[in-house]
Image 1: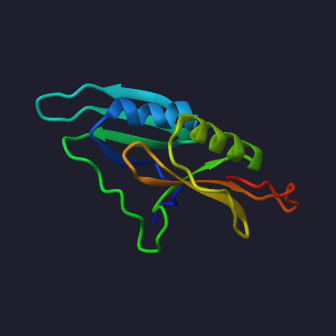
Image 2: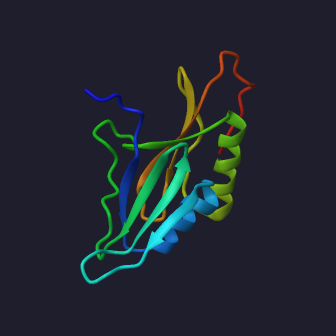
Length: 140
């Protein structure tokens, strides 16, 4: 059995590739790794580097994606930032841009917030908590 090293990519569909790529790169700080134009048999795609060796593959489709929460009532996937301060910065940037994002919540081992991307899809953004946590911050 092979040793797994992590997730290589997660594929998202969208009816507006440019808007979704812009959200993940401009607001969340991901980097566009490459983009491929549509061909007669394949849709237009973009691959976005979200850190380490992890990527989002975004596929442009004619139909809007499903935007439901997972069976636990949460986002079914998430991204990680390095610190609580960075999580606060990302949240402020999302709020300033007019996109929806929930408050930062403290969990036993991390802080988390759930945003909605331009397609309405929920995405958790989290920062792992150090053993000694910084002072609480009240968010909107």
